[in-house]
Image (tube, rainbow, N blue to C red; front, side):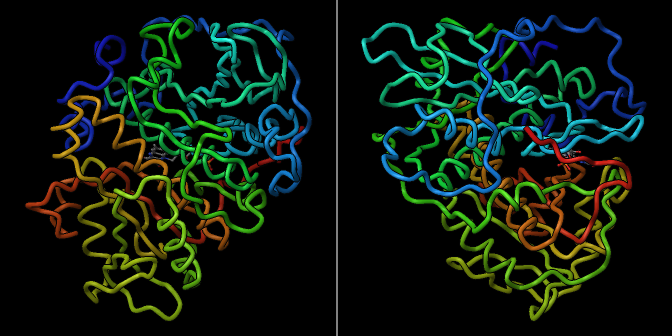
Length: 430
Ligand SMILES: Cc1cc2nc3c(=O)[nH]c(=O)nc-3n(C[C@H](O)[C@H](O)[C@H](O)COP(=O)(O)O)c2cc1C
């Protein structure tokens, strides 16, 4: 598991994980975990040591003035942490995946962690607390001034414990972990904006390492990204939908096999996706769409011109989708029944030239942030969005007309009128 510890993103991960999926081990086919002993969990905080947070509100609305209090207000913190990272549903089906969070996760393995890092205004070490979504509380990691201590800027720091996912996915884990971390970054940014907080997502490696300095267990947990929240975090205003809380509660990825009801999605969903893309935290992600059934729009391949979907090629998208969307030679999901399939691409070449191996983290982060927005938009229109890595990145590039460009597809997301598996999914209420 050398990719997991010392060098989290070696350059050959692109060919191994994005282009060939060769590093997926047999444990995935059998569904069993790797036989190696479970890695120690140095983050396991003894029960009852954390600071309980107030119950999250039913709806998300801008914090009334003085909004400057920001994350020093425990109820704002509770709303932000719960709606961006918290537990939303509990599945009681025997053998099912019991816990579902605000953000999707490959097989609900949840490698990501979220920390609140509050720099000391007097220049001492920053206070660090870990959000525990199971108990909806903050656990002290370093310093313990309690919930709601004052301070100017705060940072939500996203890390990833690759080993949680690697026990099933082996060397493919860094890819899944980087994708999820990006989705989480999109999530905290969106919820912060809905609360009216000034927030700026950050990718910078030096700043990230600085925020994690002195408290993060090296090797076991990888720094992935951060969101700065506070009066200095000046950034363009992102898209914020009405009743975001309701949309997040409605969000899900469908059943084990994505096989939605073959009904049309409303065109308003694509219009809103255009607004979300225009207000996404990072603009250098391209969204390519295959429309199969959307009210008032002919089937075909689409891109976005500004915030409007734009027909590039009228066609029945199923043959292309069934070429691209394959796992081990078999079609990955029922593309004949989906409404829309989105492919998110990024400019890989310039990023590798500039950032070397770290381009892997950065690009998955920016694409992931957009992927989460797409899931939220789908949920607002009664649709389910399924992130699915069973696709051939080279075929996607070819059929989407990206050959000869620097663009690489990092996400395939199918959208349709699917439901979770028939079981008991109970809402989690704090
Ligand atoms: C990065 C990522 C990769 C995923 N890859 C696959 C995949 O290859 N195949 C699949 O069936 N589901 C995939 N999923 C979907 C997850 O299994 C699904 O999100 C999870 O069951 C959580 O369900 P929920 O979103 O309804 O809570 C992926 C999800 C994420 C976030």
